[in-house]
Length: 618
Ligand code: C9U
Image (tube, rainbow, N blue to C red):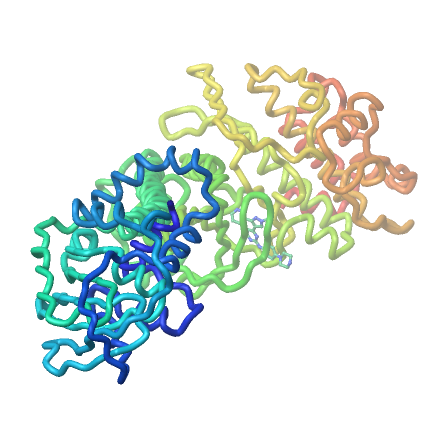
């Protein structure tokens, strides 16, 4: 049954192709396209048949064709599908088609394989009649093409399959095609069997053009939904991603601006007399003039606030002279003079804030504290740049210096006394309205001490510093994820027994670290017995960049301290230094000497040698 329906589809749906078995079928199939509908040319023949009798269109061949079309369907299946197909059939053909299908050949009306002559004439007007031979059936066809043009033709159906296709539908109104494409052809065919039976036949009446609404084409609907799905699958993630990126950028920009405003506010807090400040035309002044002014301008130890604001714009960075966890240190040029610029990683913003606060402390300026010029916080390529600008010391850090050169006793004493003088100044609170709080450094080490051209030293890096004011009893420990350098950590930090409430504890931590700096420096002090190579404290006991636990084991559990060579004991100055450093790195922080005591002891040691004593007195 399905095969039968397929045959109808061949006629009705131009999108279904016909089998390519016979050339006649091929020709025929093209002829049945509704959009260019015309029946095949008649088979012309010279032989005429006077029989004009019209007989039922039934033949053995037709019956066989139909059987072939149905052969693989059981009766049961057929019954099941009948109802369904009837509905489809109604849709396509209505009453006209049904009538014809019901009239298909049965064994009862089977007729012999007789051949006929038929009248043959061509579309559109059938004006020149001829005769064709050997027809299974004769037909009279009336066709209206998609443009509404009517065409009339007569002819022979040469084969059974041709006859079946030609005659199986008497009337076709193209409803199905009209529905799909909004345009259709119509045809009406009368078939007859008998010699010249289509002579003088009337033109069968054409069905009206169906008035059906164009149905939305399901294929394109499906395609549309595919396209929509595809677009959704592509556009949605891209749009969401774009939106997310935009939101993140906006939030980052907002936070960046907010942060910049906060950082600027930090600066402002430490510029107490902003209003009275004169904006300086820095180009007109030398560094010294600017500093002289800054000492009286109320802007702490650095430049007047308004000059600091534009520092980053005025400084030309020349070479990177240091890199570390904090960020980078550059030598820069400012008003023709070398300056040092510490550029903090934005993750170490807390250190920049703290260092700016400490340097902005009134009375911090001291010959053994790194000279502060100013801080600037700028935005470059949407990145916060935190600058701290100080004096530049060409000899670099004490660590660099000791690595580079061995020292005379004079140089050694000068380094140690200048360092401890800086530490005394830091640790000492100066009372009064123009005073300063006590400050503990918390990261004393040879890399944080710079060597001036005259061989004396300055202390740098106040990012971890804590302050204490006796009057209020307040110890200001800023929030900072950074900790001191593990190698220089005192036993009480390593075993976590340190009393953080007591400011004195922080001073003692500095003293322990200073003792290690003394050891590093004394190793490089030449005597007639020679000199040791530069070495970091505990170099024999821990690997480079030791962990907290490594240091705890060495310093607290094993109780090791840097080794004091025999050479030192043989020299009164070095022996004195060795005794002093041992007191300063004592396990018990209470017995460590205060900075001022250390300074006095160092002076005493210096006086052991007349030349050194003169230097100290100066
Ligand atoms: C890397 C440690 N550090 C050095 C300086 C600073 N940190 C610093 C601290 N706070 C604010 C600004 C800077 C610093 N360094 C100098 N001078 C200097 C000169 C030469 C070197 C290093 C430092 N060399 C290092 C080894 N290679 C040759 C050059 N002046 C002031 C501060």
